Image 1 (cartoon, chains in turn yellow, red):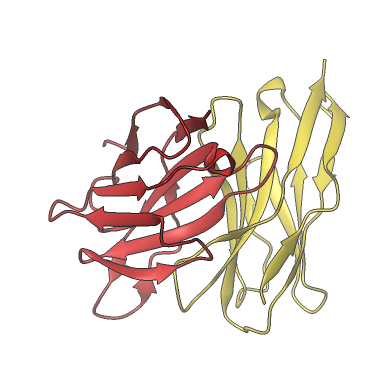
Image 2: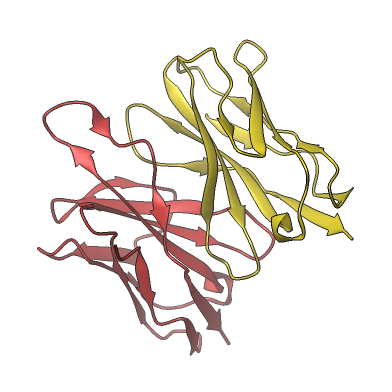
Length: 114
Length: 118
């Protein structure tokens, strides 16, 4: 069965500093997508960044980047220059290329300290 | 460009009642997926609708049913509500390339409906 594990229920980072959120997953598939979603108190699930498993290059979106280690089945999110607006729940998620069902981890709550 | 919309925002029901939640997909999308997010947990896949049919289903009982209309909007129905059905219900939309390539790689989520069962 495919699973996504986020081992850090909560994290805190000082404003302007860098923080890394961890995620591991388990799958027997070779072709899949990985995502990080952000869910602020407004509840809206917002896509932060995505990675196709066949791409070796790590995805980057402005201050957000990932460290994708396919052999280790690891997919961490690095947030640089943390801002107060980054405070939210962050969910790591997985989807095979065969269907559209997304499997989510339990989330990491990120606090930004001013 | 309108995003995914859901109604109502909040809903309070009592045990045993039935509830209907509604979702309109993002413009250009034809596939709707429903997720249940219990407090403090990640969303769990309920089912997905494409071409007005249920295409995939997660591990949810038959009390959870749905429908997709010709305009791609969708409803989630839950019968015989239990206290444990209290959750945030999220709708997500995507686009299926029937000619090949499968689903686009991004699902866009709505703001959710908070259901409280008393």
